[in-house]
Image 1: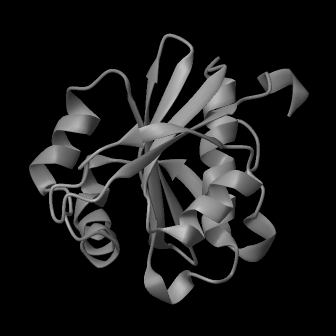
Image 2: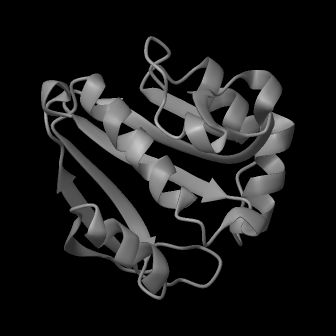
Length: 164
């Protein structure tokens, strides 16, 4: 997301950049495909225009937005709000690349740690997060409003940007 240097992945045609309001229609397609309780256009618009803690990026492949990720950067902690990839592009380790870029951006912004919530039933995501250094740190009972499923809270330390 840091535009000053080429993003890793460019050799595969992947480009990471800041999300713009004009991207919201494409983001909503991904959001509706990936989540049972998708965010609304208004929610994304508010994040991009009114929430000064919010940092969102998109991942493009051959000029098409195929994934996105967002976080709130508060003091020295990053809180992942959402991360999603179009289903047809899953299984290529590109979700991992998206998470890597989000974590790199958080580190660049001076964040020392990063946290997220994940459904207790989502083993695929939990395995990815563990691979990236996230550790379980508790549960949020009934966190998901669609089915009252619990969320696992996970945390990871971030290296300083100079170490990346």
